[in-house]
Length: 297
Length: 313
Image (cartoon, chains in turn orange, purple):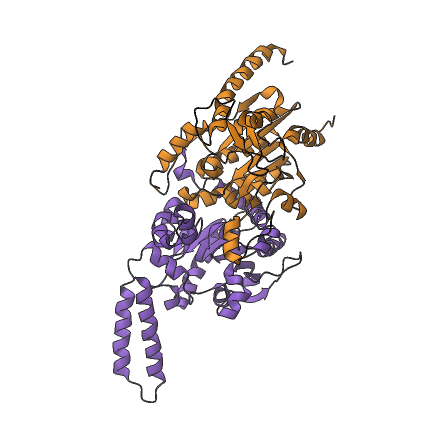
């Protein structure tokens, strides 16, 4: 049935791969630009302290080959690694920058981040298929102002939820955020209510929502749609919590125990269904989608 | 500025009380002091955001227990989240409002140090939010309108709160409150900080006292996050646009409840009357809607809460 579209599909997927090389180059370059060719640039894993060529880390889904430490990965690349043939359709969202607090230099900051990351805001929304199962996929990026949620992020997430609701599609959200965006004040706080209300509507209409918590998911995002999943997964070692560790330490006046608020801690305390490493993410999501599809297999 | 004026007013009030209790009452001196107080109160006309934060946190500012005593009747307190803990920072129960059974829920800070500690200074843990939700779902079951009073420095950022799921407790409240099929009215009476305030604030009508503040975070926290310097909180107060007037202009709140000059604590009776009047007005509008309309009304309100600032490409 889809054969007539196949060539078009193929071409589009090539285009996507072209975009990819630009985006992923940037993710490799992020730390310090140097004269060394990209292939030879080295990096050290912050966890096991092993030295690696950046390119080797990148080819391993941005995961440390020896200790499994999950590095940050760009939103678009994450989607491509997930969907069938790397092909996805971005969702349109016509919401533009706004500065309700007249916060100084805020617009310049956003523009420079847009240039640096190739993203329009801290979240990327699209539709794609995983092992043949269509889903709405939302990915937040901590590279864009710590993935903080202001009006545009809240609206894009809400529109993605509403799209999934309208089209009766499952919804997968990869969260990564420091919380509500300070620069937009109270209207950022209101995004928590807006997204959570949309999620509840989707929930009451029988929609499937899989939340994937990645490093870090805290504040206003963890206290809204991130923790409302029917199924909650987490990448290994991600920091997940309402308050950040520094604030807690200041409040209680003592050091936090090792591993506090990490994925493994959250699973132990009953807030995460399973911890899934990046290389197993596609098959795990495919399994969950399969188990929720009407026809089974 | 307000701090000095307010402290002077308190001094004069004490002095007047002292004079009144003496064997021979010096009426002339009392008159002079009352004039002085009057002049001081008049100086409180133009308060800035920082002044309002001071008033919003004032120790003598009316609290949920005062509102319950003065606006409601026949209050029956309900404790506990029914999951293993009672959290004193959320206070709630069933009461009669002009003869109508309602559920009342709010942050509780306590009136003296001992109570403050028992109530964790009005900073709930997940158990508090779960208790609030329990009471709200029960209100929905019995068709009772819900009235919430918001006054919190924020959800508690502690070890136990995190371990027991602070995030999911707040998120669940936001989601479930949005779909409740009974009228919900929220009144921001003091400080409404962060998700800890919003977690009982997803209401059909959100009202705010004139000198209350409502913000994404406390000004101190805001200054720490943005400038790594909590001492710049006065600057943050202006930056954040957290006064009732600001929020009304944003479209985040529906109405402002006037306070007496110099702050609610100077004439609480007047405040109870105003709060009562506003609740009554909102409730009258809301009880005309059927259960589905109520949920839809609330959903739409929060779906479009930022519409004035939604720029299109």
